Image (cartoon, rainbow, N blue to C red; front, side):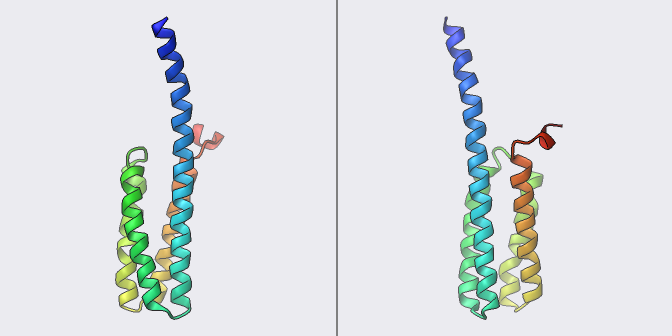
Length: 126
């Protein structure tokens, strides 16, 4: 009887963990993308201090979420975001708007790729 209870607990636990993974990845990528869009908007409005503050908040939030995401997502999927995010602040400080906007778009694309690669779909199974 003990083995049946353990087996049932495992069968319940696995889908619950998968669901939590889906929710966390989806929410994290959406919030991080929104932060980048806000930073871009500030930069387009010629408000560099607000853009800089938002980028610092993005980098802090990314580092916090990266620690959790790295427990269930391959490092190779997360590292491009780390590298690109590291360039954002210097680009703002050097008034490199085209590089900043390009890297924001690249990070959003990378975040979307992470979200899609972690989503439950037939494409990810086969």
